[in-house]
Length: 156
Image (cartoon, rainbow, N blue to C red; front, side, top):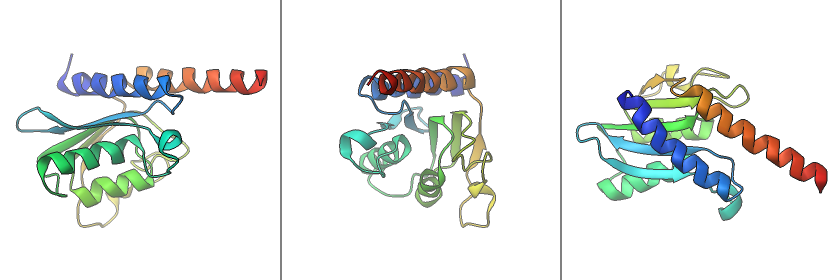
């Protein structure tokens, strides 16, 4: 198992927690590159918090910032099960996360290449980005969740 796969599995564990709470199963971890320590964890909490801001990435970035004592997440990487949306890609840029690793591609809102590549625009920070790590497992978690949601809605 590669280092990227190891941390993506941690993100998948968080995505499973989200699914258990009827949240879209997206999980994220922020890792301090030099030590390998997970300094931030998050999973989607939009329904629970009734907030459009509580995406997995935002929760993990916020936790990492608090733990590390500042908003600049230098020497940090973000591992997330779904390609970041525009809001989350913006948070990555603003927090100075150095590298983003995601699992499943998001053809509807992905902002690391699927719909748009925000990291390729002339912002003041350009994180490295790797997509498709454990892609099948990450995509399957989402498919299973949405299939179950459709059945629950149909059966009312």
